[in-house]
Image (tube, rainbow, N blue to C red):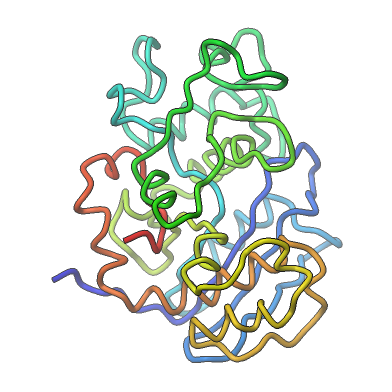
Length: 287
């Protein structure tokens, strides 16, 4: 049986790879062990969070064992071609090396922005990304094993190599990999490392709403459905500033889901059944 790590604090972070220093899409919610509703955290120095501020928060989140969920892909597909970037000689062979590779590509960009990987003509992996317009003839929609498992739960993420449109996860994942490079190895990044005092896991808010058997579309427009989702995870109804964006809803729901799902041995055991998870990572809550 898999040991179940115990946490006292839970952060749900809705992430963004937008070019702005302080993207409106970054929202952070926190809850403590128990059943109190998550609360939205106020950014430390402005109206919106910067990615550097989120990095500092995760690196030193306060007292008590903390589980942090972040909404981006922690790695790319690897299992299908035994490579993150098929055809690239001497490419990264594990997740920490991938994070370092992405960091090196984007070293000239401040604020953890990741566009050089696909926009810089000198990038050796530029051709792997879908950057706009009609799907390129060469583009293959490679999905990680965890993404396919999530799709089985009727919550399929967008392709990670797609880096345009408001719904894309590619830009956020590039910025997130830069974040993980800065946090590793001081912070445990699961499932690439065993849980520690601060553990970061990949989340997918839409999955948590679907697992709660609540309709996920336009959740921001219906507080009753938000509270029903929270209740499914043993949380009291939300109280606090208006949940007037999807990003705020996602952060609050994710924090509550993290708290509830972290007690389930099956959640922690799931990656061990999939050899690909050692390279590709896993979405917390997919069993």
